[in-house]
Length: 300
Image 1 (tube, one colour):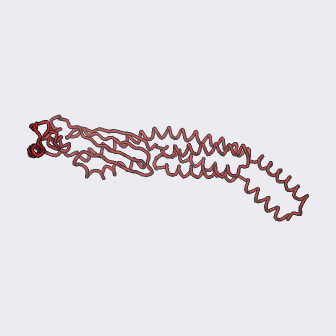
Image 2 (cartoon, one colour):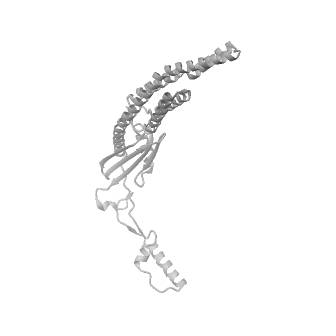
Image 3 (cartoon, rainbow, N blue to C red):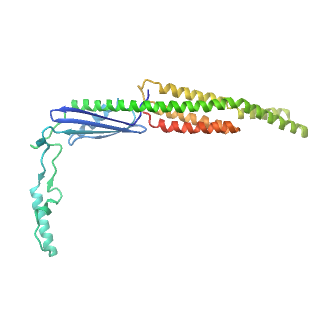
């Protein structure tokens, strides 16, 4: 079983200070990278939230948003007036008018637009001025529940990924079968062509038989793609084995490495091909490997 790195989850808990809501979103990232948003006054809990998320979300960019909906609308607080700041703003505007010779009175609307004369309520305080405190245990339970929801989402997405990866592997095996079936005939054709050329050469020139034997051996090794075929099949088998794991560990990096090795073997087969049919099959293999690479980038 594999998991996608794309996920979403949410959980809510009723507490004595209000309804606690945690929302977690995840996207691709090479490592575990977290971004935590907590209500005002609770920044000290950021490291704890990261520790609660880590065991469940092994890779990806993880955004955790924590909010608190107060039960009583009056506890949400009211806008606050800074009267000293308002007086100071009034004096500034009057002085400005006098200095520039402007006519007119400073009205309430003008003063109200002065920065911080009227402040929105502090989300970290009650209407009575006291700070509220989110219970840490309730926060932990809610974060873990949201993380579990993300895991479920990722597993569902991972199943779709696995199906697509399996389809890509099947296409690769089909192309590899064409290469393998064509390889012997292509070697025979190359051998016959080489024999003909050697025959022509022997008739017209003296030939060093030992050197000729070495050259023939070298060409045979150069054209032989059996090792690449065997290694490629081994990579396919290893990827299938990895896809069938129990999901207890992050396998995305391992899959990326396998795909990298597949690309290397497909390139070698293509470069050694010297045959139209094998060359076309090698191109098809590289196309499928590239599709694998794109999908594997999203595996946790």
